Length: 112
Image 1 (cartoon, rainbow, N blue to C red):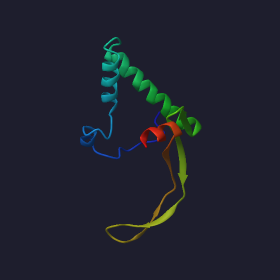
Image 2: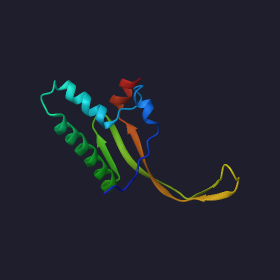
Image 3: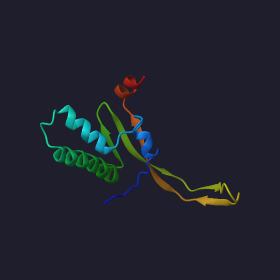
């Protein structure tokens, strides 16, 4: 089911500082904002379904856009040579696919 594996950029401890929001934190916030009118389990399922849908669209189409938020898309990197940092041996880095995000103009304006 998963065609790309996304590695977290930071450890979970940074999440508590506010730099990242885990799915559980997002679920809790939505639950609080809706003043508990929808069960937490239903919200958890909706959040999971949204991310699953996004993931499937990126895997199928190579991109997924959300109006006024941005676009997730796949890029292909070419094979290249590099140097092993410990042994200083020349190594070949294979070609791979990576996921990128480009923020929409409204989001960029809010961040500025």
